[in-house]
Image 1 (cartoon, rainbow, N blue to C red):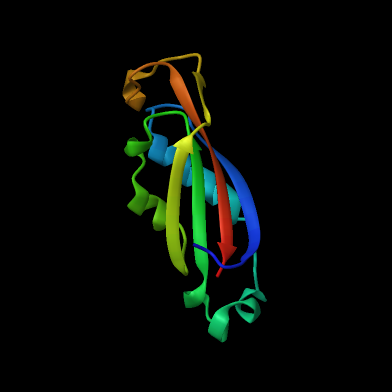
Image 2 (cartoon, rainbow, N blue to C red):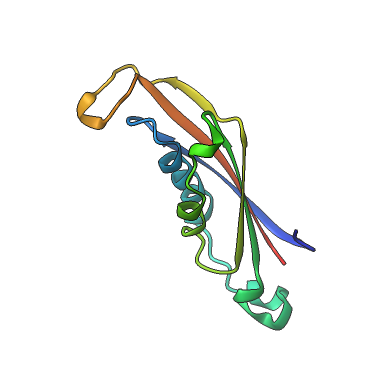
Length: 120
């Protein structure tokens, strides 16, 4: 667990076709972290090292949480010790069309919410 949370970023990711909850989760994490620059973060971390950073990713998914590939989620975070928690949530709603060439099993799109906590 984290001793101190420095900041939290949130994001949303959608997989419109293919019903891939991991793809939607990766997009949610990317949405949460891609527009950030943290040039002074090292000053707040023990030993002033990014390797001492802890990152906790919490995902709310609308499908079986065991379908989320945790290693692929962790790979999205470039530094620190990363943990991933998956809970029920998000949304499954119609995309309005089923496209076999997009590997659709049905007409659902998955929407995932992410909260990325950074601290030490």
